[in-house]
Picture (cartoon, rainbow, N blue to C red):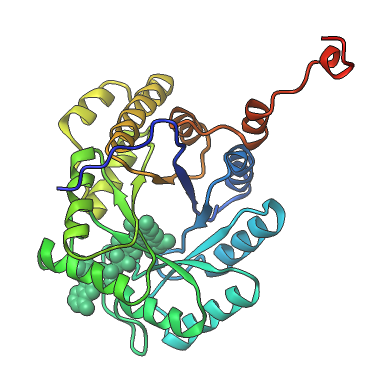
Length: 309
Ligand SMILES: Cc1cc2nc3c(=O)[nH]c(=O)nc-3n(C[C@H](O)[C@H](O)[C@H](O)COP(=O)(O)OP(=O)(O)OC[C@H]3O[C@@H](n4cnc5c(N)ncnc54)[C@H](O)[C@@H]3O)c2cc1C
């Protein structure tokens, strides 16, 4: 087992995930959240891609606007679902030509409850997409990993072998599906290392305040909701403020445990909201860039500047 102890003085690096909004109000929320989180200087912000490519143009528009207006490293997600290889390659070329250098490469899921079937002439699995992107340009590529095993995988060992194949094809980071038990993630990280995966395995943190929504997400991706998590949300359906506090406490506990175990990068599924992610990052020691600079170089009192002290 790998035992790492984080330097308590060091600040971890973080990345934030957003999804393309579907209406004007959600759009305002997205940009407000970005403005709030940007000063924390994330290593990148990523934008998801609709299940069947339905958000292709919106993902592209948001990714390019984030890059142009915030100067942050802006990263599109790209999936294999419902598109031929040449279409996906064309999208990737457009990104490269527009200055985008990092992609989160995924297989994706079909819309609704349909079983996944590879598109004729398309990439069948995420590993094939990673290899295809590598042939387009020297992209940095992140891929998905599953601490509790992907629901369609024949076995945990096979799932891990397929994850290794994505890394061997050229991925340089694994971002995990969300989870609530730090030990589940840490065991997964250790299994990745034992399987020869040498790239960073980054925990995906989902700060969620609506338990019903959480149950839906978890059912879809096979994540376990511990009894203790369910118990803490019980009876709070009509109390958003208490839920918010519970959600923050749970997520801060989780990242603190991971940090103590040596985790140095965190990816946040923000659900386009800033407040919880901001508070969790604060608890990890992150400060807005301007404030951090002030702490390192406190302003000289005016009397001192004038040479009177
Ligand atoms: C960080 C993160 C971001 C995500 N972003 C999006 C998004 O923007 N849009 C979206 O639609 N979905 C997104 N998803 C969900 C993801 O698309 C689904 O979980 C999907 O079901 C699997 O995608 P994958 O890239 O892990 O697929 P793969 O790595 O291809 O694996 C999918 C399944 O196939 C199996 N497998 C892999 N290779 C082979 C092979 N050669 N032969 C047989 N079986 C194989 C695996 O074990 C696994 O069960 C995201 C998930 C994560 C964790």
